[in-house]
Structure formats: structure tokens, C-alpha cells
Length: 355
Image (cartoon, rainbow, N blue to C red; front, side, top):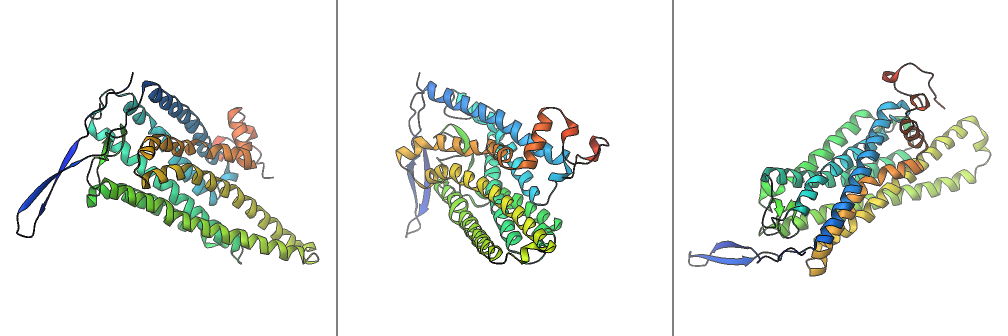
């Protein structure tokens, strides 16, 4: 059973000509995409699976940092912020399911404010994820390349990290409010896709899509790419220097410095994997935003699903590549509190496992 194809909605625009007379014109809104029942059911099943894995995985990340003091590093503040963003993203999925299952294609079946809230939350979460990636890249660059002791690097100062997190959420909320503040679109039910995003029938909707595409791609990704290129160039040069000075590496101080640097390199590689996966998941959706062909219109919901998929992939990366997270994950899933390395005092007094 296919959804019936509706006539394209129209909106009016008015302007003044050279003689001061008002002219009114009718513009046809973008075409409505029709979906078969099987397509909608497939999307709902995929979103349900993503939601279950995302809630479990991101919940484990946040719970692990709460339960293990070993994971309470300043770098992991960004990891927790990313997990919180991903958790909010998957908790927002039920509204997408309601929109997909609705037979009322001309509008949102529930209260309009719920759809507006769902749309705003989605945009805030995507922006927060991207800007968290940017801050991770910047912090990695300064931490790895800093000539000072890594514990005194400015990126590790708690006040700087708190300020960065506040900035991330503030700019994300501001971007989501652009349609309200500057009339560059309208958040709510989109009749084109039958989803709670921004209304594509609004005359200024293409402007908002362009703004998001620019903020999400050229600006943010340029910073990320430059930072990691500089990081890996520094790692390469440092490795060459260490190999050419074998005698110095035998001293206690230089062994310690080498071990600390090696740890930072491994952490950087793990976080770089997170960034790469995010870029892969975000790129299809960003390309669809910049295009307006029939193919891109049809592909957009699936591209959005790939973007949401990223919200449940990060915990899997931590579990596979981060030994401390992996150890805490296993202990929590086995309900073995004694197995948590350096567990929090609130969980009871046990011998700390600091190794």
C-alpha cells in the first residue's frame, strides 16, 4: 500500500515593484516524496535497532566514567559529552517513528510543539557532535605537540574544558534557533519527507539547508583535517628523533617521557577513528543537503539514518580499542563491581586497581 501522492502545497510571496505597487506570486513547494509501506517499516525497524544499541552503548560510556575514577580524565570529558549527545539523539528517535507511521501526510499527528521540539533537538545534537569532534582534534593537537609537561597543557585545565563544553552547546542551540531569529526557515513537520526537521515548503528553507551544510562540512571538517595532519606530522618527526637517539632513551626520564608520549599517540589514534567514522556517517547527509535532485530527495531519509547510526557506533569503538573502557564495560555487564579498575568511592571501599 503506497501513500497517496498529494498535490504540491504552495506559498505566496509579495514584493514591491518600481512604482510602489505590491505584486503577489505563487510558488510551488518542493514535491512530496512517497514511500511504500515496506519502505516505512524497514526504516522503523532500523531506527528501533539503532535506538536500542545507542541507549545501551552510550549509557555504558557515561556509567563507566561515573563508576571508574581511572576514566575521569579531562580528555574523557569530550568523550562523555559525545556520549550524552548520542544518547539524546537516539532518545529522539521515537518522534521519527511516529512521523514515519503516521497516515496523516499533510501534517504532524500530535501536538505541533512536540515536532518542533524534536526537530530542534536533532539539530542541536548533530551540531554538538560535530563541534565536539572539532574540540577533540584541537585538544589532541595541543596535547601531543606541547613542549611542556602534558599534565600542565592548557587543554587539560578543567576550566578550559568546561568553557569548551559550554561553547559547544551554546553554539549548537544558536544554530537550531536560526530559523526563529532570522526567518531562514521553519522547524517542525516536513511534508516532503514526513519527518520532524525543518519545513522544506518554507520559502527560506534552502537558505537554512545551505547554512547547515556549510557549518557541518567546509568549516568544521577543515579544522579537523588540519589538526590531525599536524598531529601525525609531529608523531612522525618525533618517532624519527627517538630512533636516532637510542642512548638518551635509556635514561629514566626519557623512558618516562617516551611512555607518556606513546600513550598520547594511542589515545589520539583511537579518537581519530571516532572522527573518521563520524565523517563517513555524516557525508551522505551533507551531500543530500547541498543537492536538490530527485535522487537526493529520495536518498535523504536513508542518509539521515546513516547519520543517526553513528550514535551507536562510538561505544563499539571504545569497547574494541580502549582497554580501560573495555575492562569497565565487561565488569558492568557482568555485574562485577570488584572488577572495575580504580572504582569510585560511592560504590564502596575496595582495593584500588591502579595498574
